[in-house]
Length: 224
Image (cartoon, rainbow, N blue to C red):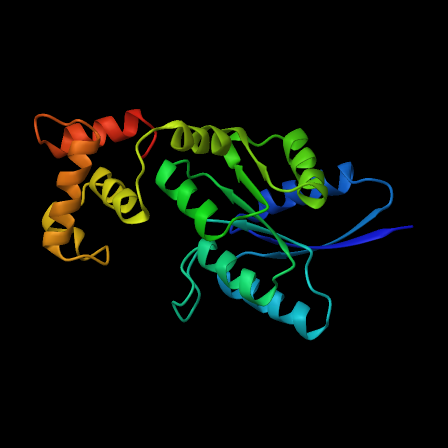
């Protein structure tokens, strides 16, 4: 008995999508029938999702690249936005995140907020791993690539607990954002930011009080 699997692949590089398609089609199981649609930007992806609902042919698997051109209305600025939207309108679809990013903060947030059935770092990806990941995601999710698992393991085994705001502060500092400007990027007052930074320096045993030392230690422990 054949198994029809409806797939939407969203990536702004057509050649990458073509490679994914060819891999899945050449490695699928004999009983699997793959129907693959593609989208190259947020608007095309949203329209494809909505069309699948209208036609009552909802997607089973969504491959979503994180770095995407924004939608025309500016409401969707990345694949993360698309994935969050997909969770609402296609609750039964399995979401597979693909990205070149490997910052610990971003990986942690995607896992916490989206909880994808698959999370693959493109630099890890081979045809063989994509084929294995696809079957695992269908049957025994989740499947996370080596880099993702390594970063998550570093976070779990560390005895330092950081909430999302503290992680965000570390991430922004590592990107060169000045303390006086942090409040513009996070839902905290400047005094709130200062208190958290002080607490972070205590947690990470930063004796010299320097932001550079905090960033260096946080990076060494895998938090950024």
